[in-house]
Image (cartoon, rainbow, N blue to C red):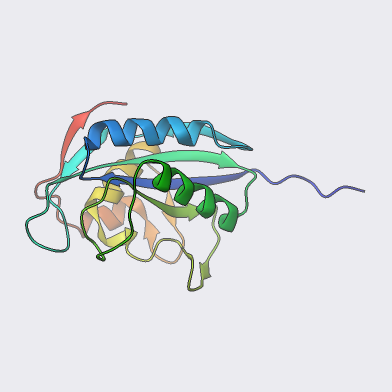
Length: 167
């Protein structure tokens, strides 16, 4: 007897501040839609926000994609890193400028912490550039271990965050 295939709702944060960030995000969303055993359910608007991390970086473009997938968290993370690599991502300075950053924010209600992957993403509940687009695609979402997205948004500054393109 075969085990049932589990379809899990997942959310991916997208960010870019190099090499035409608007195009980087649009290409990444297209790539997410083509992942095996995965369906792109929705995407947020594209937002601009000041870069966090080393000074002198260009502003970031950010978005969130909602997926339904049969991939495990580890397999989805590997697929996301493959998309990053294909779009010129070079890993270097932490929180430095990058062509593309894809963060697995949530995989269902799973709580996980390892050297390779933490779920939910450990900083997402503190970042308006994640929470605002996430609320756009999932307005009643509860983030495991942190609470309702609407309450989390009350506690973060949105200074500098603005919509630059609709989905």
